[in-house]
Length: 52
Image (cartoon, rainbow, N blue to C red):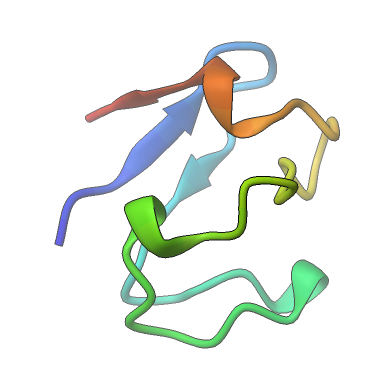
């Protein structure tokens, strides 16, 4: 699965790890994250993420 990077703070969402801060389990693709999901580091929305 593809990783995505926050263009604001450079946090990388890696689907293999998920997002424990926002209680997202591993193996959830970025595309399947809820629309109101935000970066766990800077709180930027999904629209600020770019594919790696």
